[in-house]
Amino acid sequence: GLHGNVLRVAPPLTLTVEEADEGAGMLAAAVADAAAEAEAEAGRRGSR
Image 1 (cartoon, rainbow, N blue to C red):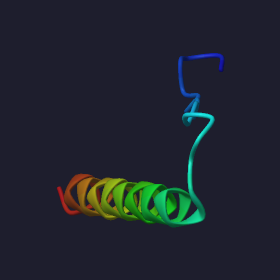
Image 2 (image 1 turned 135 degrees about the vertical axis):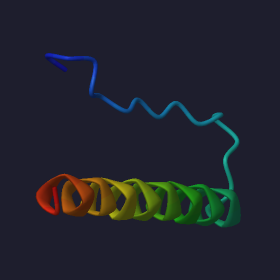
Image 3 (image 1 turned 180 degrees about the vertical axis):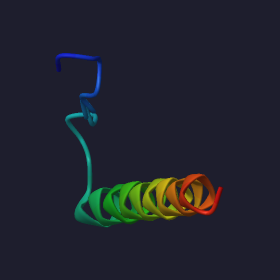
Image 4 (image 1 turned 180 degrees about the horizontal axis):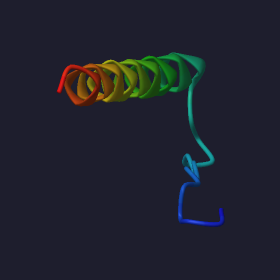
């Protein structure tokens, strides 16, 4: 991306459905954590 904001996923060719589900869940959790942290940071900035 323009500022290096691209997530490239290159799973092994022998990826199972279960492994894909696990990886997708881990990615979703990481994105949710990052979004929550961004919201908290925005709230801290707004309360100054």
